[in-house]
Image 1 (cartoon, rainbow, N blue to C red):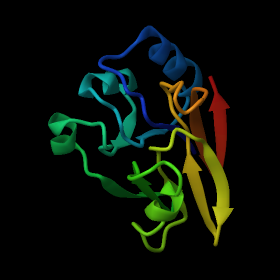
Image 2 (image 1 turned 90 degrees about the horizontal axis):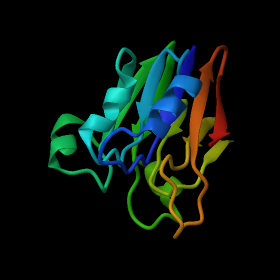
Image 3 (image 1 turned 90 degrees about the vertical axis):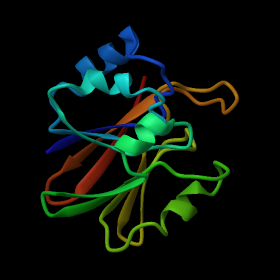
Amino acid sequence: MKIGVISDTHLDAPTPFLERVVDKYFKDVDLILHAGDICAVEVLDVFRGKKMYAVAGNNDGPDIERRFPTNELINVKGFKIGLTHGFGFPIGVEKRVATLFEDIDCLVFGHSHWPVNHRREGILFFNPGTFQGWIFFLCRRSIGLLTIGQDIRGEIVWL
């Protein structure tokens, strides 16, 4: 099973670039996870036809906060995935979000704009980075893919 993972789109509406990225990298995924900072609910239209989970981030307004939780626990093929955005200063966000869920196999988060793909204490910590990119953080655009088989593996895709 393949899962497309995106975070920090920071868009007011879908863009042609976002549509090209979704068509190229998420075409064959079974599920989409959006780790927050969507910024406009219309952005999610690019995932039409795909099963999707999303969470609200710190830059999301009331329309998104009403529609999506801040934390979501997802069961996929016998694996438990915690989905959240993150909070506070970008440095240290991984440590803070690690306290939000218990007994999970993977923790998907965003917020820092820095990709993360490693295991700690048996949990895959996965941050796809930022779709939009920010000069302030000197971050390149990226998304992610999770593959579920006998285990759960992550891949960062640089855009």
